Image (tube, rainbow, N blue to C red; front, side, top):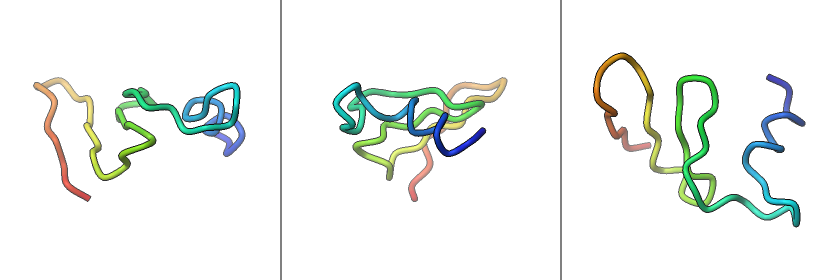
Amino acid sequence: MTLERFEEFITTENGLLENKLVCIENVMINPTNISSVVEKIGVPAKFMEV
């Protein structure tokens, strides 16, 4: 994924960070709270601290 495509996923039309869970490949992140990352695999979501 290019940086430009990644930025499209995590920003609003105004260029601000999204304040919602965004799924990028097998990971879900909240761009405004990047310390909370959820990895999506075949088992229930597991929260990981950064």
